[in-house]
Image (cartoon, rainbow, N blue to C red; front, side):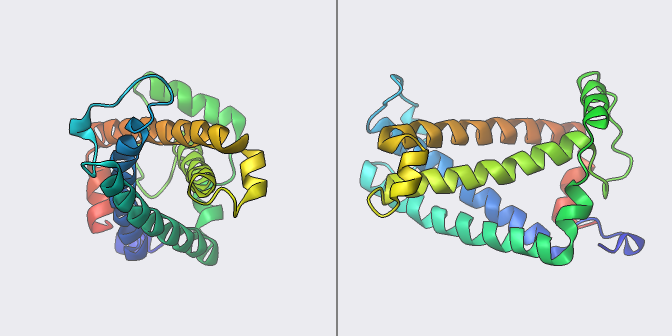
Length: 198
């Protein structure tokens, strides 16, 4: 990271962020259409906010975006590990500092003076999204190729359990996105840094 040049987010990070945003949007909207085919939780999602038009179309969109998210996610994680960014940006997580930052966030007093530095709430949220994405991919593998991944199928509670895990992980990701967008609206310059890098 070249803070002295005003760079907050390197170009590879910005590109991967926006590719992930597209992949997640397509996955959520097509996934809602796939969910509606069974509505196994007892409710349906309005078809106006789904993608694919019909089950076959939704599955095609979902599988295409799945590969984009998986490949881009692996490249993102690999790049963060290779550059050391994972350790410098997201660790350490200190429980007392996390509680202080969470308290400040709830009071609307969380400091955003240095966009190159993640506070403890941001660190935890971004680490959660990384872990949640892994859960989404692994539970999705069970739904896609249940016979080929017997261990994953057992860990997720069978095929029906994997559907619940997958839907729950998707719901958690949607909640993160809503909060993330609200924070961007409260601190608009963060949008500029992820677009321009500075």
